[in-house]
Amino acid sequence: MSNKVQQVHEEILDMVENSKGELKTMVIKLTNAKNPAKGLKFATLNKWYQEMFKTHDPEDIHILAKPMDGGFVTLKRFNYNTDSLKHSDDNYYSSLSKEVKDRLQGTYYSAEVTINMIKKKSKKNKK
Image (cartoon, rainbow, N blue to C red; front, side, top):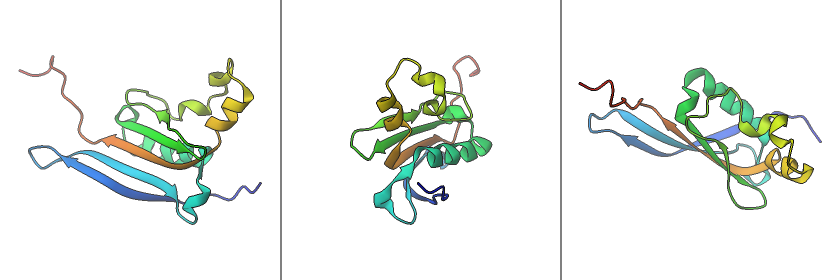
């Protein structure tokens, strides 16, 4: 196995504006920049998320990934406030098999990231 750093290709799928013309939500598709068919390693997605963590509130980021063997896996939910993806923590796997860990920390064909750009105002703060 090589330890080459994968380059991530970001493709904007959707940009939703509110009635004031402000960017409200952005949806981005992530793939392997050099060879999309080889997919993105979990470590690459986790590193990408850690970079996003520096500029966006983690509670505003949702990541849904497509494993190479099909289906979908939520790697990061809205309102989950940590600096790494939930499947990177070995404690997460304490009651799961090695096969499950290998699949979740394996390679993903692509990932779809939704970012809330504008904070929702709570009803308590409205006057």
